[in-house]
Image 1 (cartoon, helix red, strand yellow):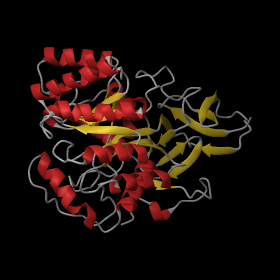
Image 2 (cartoon, one colour):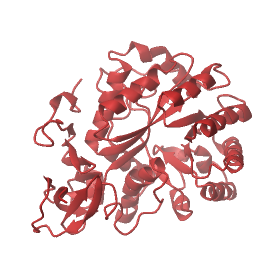
Image 3 (tube, helix red, strand yellow):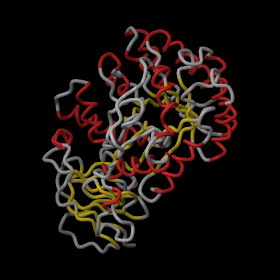
Image 4 (cartoon, helix red, strand yellow):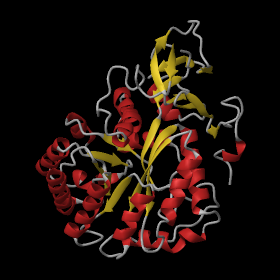
Length: 419
């Protein structure tokens, strides 16, 4: 039965082939010159084909991408950043749902078709910011798969009433429950973790916990998380975001933590931080731990950085790790594509097979990028890209495709340059 023919592409920079897709999945490869009947055809022009990017850690509810630049006004420290966001997010020139939709569109247009976004739930915003991210997801439902985390950014114990709001958020459509620095923010790790694990168990959802805590404090919080995963049988259902404790402890402490993370099938996400917070990727890979890459905040009240481009964030991951060899830089691309996909979809394995996400049965979600090699594509970060979701072209050259034209025309109103 005819489907989509993605003609003349180079999977992971290899020899040119054409890829076939049907019902949202890849079905195989044929020679470039093969005459294959298809309902639609996408000409790859010899570009490199990769699995589409996954932004495994975004905050679409706080973004200001596309709006006039705003100087940074936060006080020092994590609480200063949280307070700055709470004080200013309502005063943005556009509504929260408009801003979330714009940034999600830019992220998709750059090559990501799987996104996990946190949405702040607290006594200040109630469910308003969650509803904005859910609205953005609906706006782009045919262009990307979006998971939403109900996230207690201001804490739970210190922000009474948030626990009930998190419960309501899961009923309203959030896919996962979030958590945040149970020692450093709430200063009551037992109550914080009991609340979020209790909500996860009651609603049958997974967890994604921000853990900025470093050193032995972070190790202590991780051990408390491990205890609850074991007690509740929630292996494979928990993600730890940032996990700075893995970069700020002695080798023996880190080794023991990684052993437990692997045993409990806990996934990790990183935002490619600099300095002493870089995750021990080689050790995690050797242990079979799922690791995804995300952009975190994008031009928001936390920082002026971020543009929605996961290819650029992949470059950043290679840069902060000090990588030069092509195979290691390609490994960063795997983290940004297949790694994140395995975090969002718990049924996928952490390790890819020989086809590396482009074989029969893999999702027909691809990004085609210009470049001589995969490493060259990361270094150059060309705007020449085609983004495919479930076998359908959804973006070209950083611009979303008009749904009515199915790839024949562009949709300027959602382009990256719009202000």
